[in-house]
Length: 113
Image (cartoon, rainbow, N blue to C red; front, side):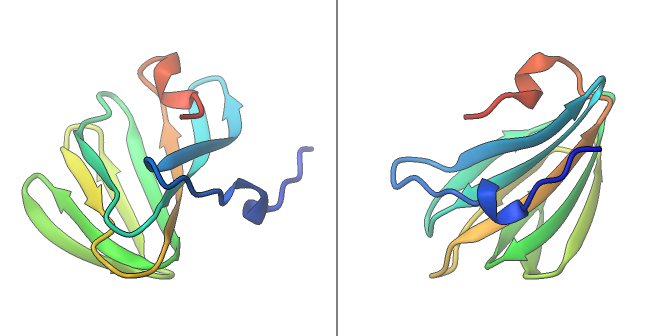
């Protein structure tokens, strides 16, 4: 068993969003993405993976295959690896997203940034 407290992975940087890996097991990884107001995640896909997200705090905007999806605390989102997604913290508060990737395509997806 491994136990963590999510708040240990909520860490913001004024230069760019942060990604803090909580677990990595075989082809699955769990991490927290943290965004200060105005920070964003560029459009990308996760080929062969499914992405499950929970909004821990804040609100913002996803673009899923070009469709705008507004999110707020406690919302969940499921995205297939074939769907292109991007995120922007367009609010005035910090945003933290709990993310689980199943069947990660390669090791780059399970690294802290």
